[in-house]
Image (cartoon, rainbow, N blue to C red; front, side, top):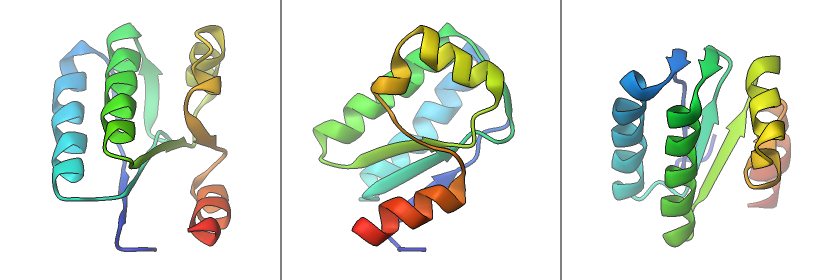
Length: 108
């Protein structure tokens, strides 16, 4: 995988307790100059409103720096949350990491 691409894999529940730590991790990657961040949600079982809010904040920060912030491997609950809030139209979402690599990395 490209050295300017970094994958982050949160686990469990992305709620107010974990959102701050997750935000700090992603912001550190942005500060390091990572151009593409892929958030692999395969180990996330649930996202609440604060977790979703954190993802939106990080997306805005990445876009402000002309970086990419992508998501892959959502479970049905997370996908439903994204669809109900129309966030599925805002984020670059891939079925899984392979789909990301096949699409995003071939374009770059």
